[in-house]
Length: 103
Image (cartoon, rainbow, N blue to C red; front, side, top):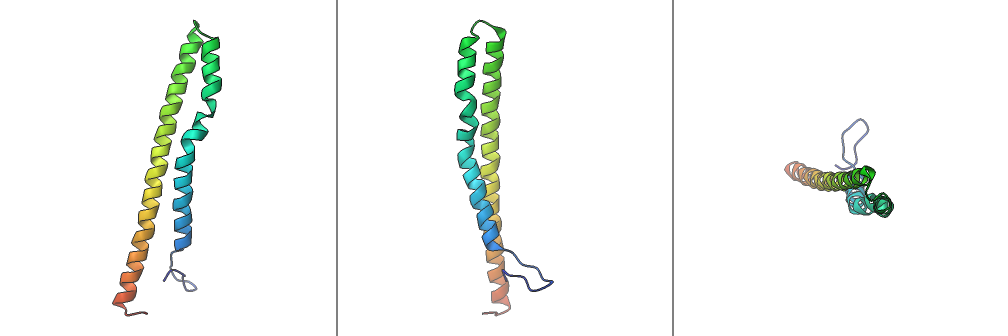
């Protein structure tokens, strides 16, 4: 049932698994990729010590970290949902096949 007949409906389980893996990898890599600006921003904050700009840079970096954390959470949630979707399709396919007594 995972391969549709011409004009029929089917689910590509490999594609669902790949999507889950991709989302999981993105979530794993997100904090590191989001941290690229940390050193440069920290240096700039130090160089601008005493200026309002230093505080603004620090605040923007804090906001950036919060946004990266939120994005990582969304990616993890989407990965879990994708994994659940794949499992649901598999179990439904099996149940339908068994109910139809299809080998």
